[in-house]
Image (tube, rainbow, N blue to C red; front, side, top):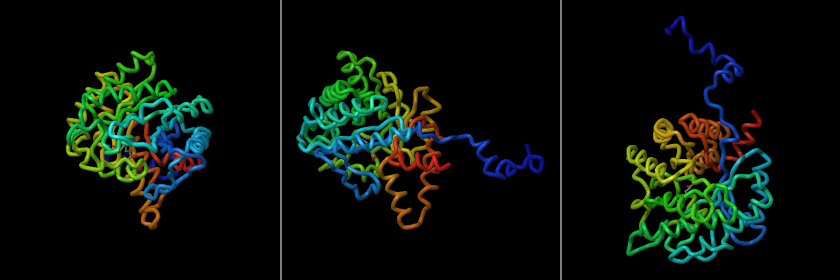
Length: 325
Ligand code: PBG
């Protein structure tokens, strides 16, 4: 095909033509909506760096989840902020922990909503690291049992999917084994397989009060310079029993999303993280970006790169925009 026989502009002439030949269709069915849960009642506390996103008490989370569900959003992912933090993250495993109670109530009132839980320690440990500390470092193997216990307690509360995000080696295998031994062989694992040590998690750490007190996460999260390593990480998780794989963050990592899509045939999630949301919101607030257009462009690009599932703080807003047409 060559100009002037072929003219690419022919199919761009009208809205109808453009829609007809659109290769990627963003849909409400793609979205997972993150919720931050705190203790208390009637709490809907704004998060400064994530305008439009709140820390919610369980009752408010139920209301928000119902709204999302009624709009057609298929899933939420839960992050708990306990009142008590200690060095071992004990509050993460207890039966009446914040996430366990939230899951329980969500499944009672909205049985069809897919409830995903983040399985990690950083929101529960006083030091803010994603595992048990030994000296200055996070002890990998000692953390595995705890992660498996957390996942089992989430499954027991009724979680539909558990999503380990601690980036410990062997975490998917340990969790699969724990789930299977406790009669939860049907609970799938969404593995944060290629999770990078990223500056774009900043606002999340404010929201979840989970910034490490000392040091950073570079000894367990991935170096953003690496792509082959991401494929190795995903490969390990697939072998250990992951049902869904994930690349995180999304925007600066669309090459990784594309590569993962081409090299693996499991459902692929991309996490459009807090910093990506914050950047867009900050620029839009200044009038430097068109909020609505930028949201749809960003999310469509993530899908175009190969994501089957998009975890995004824009879930509600994007759904409204898609409905508007
Ligand atoms: C827990 C976890 C984090 C995010 C999701 N799960 C924080 C971190 O690793 O520091 C970040 C999500 C976001 O920035 O939106 N480990």
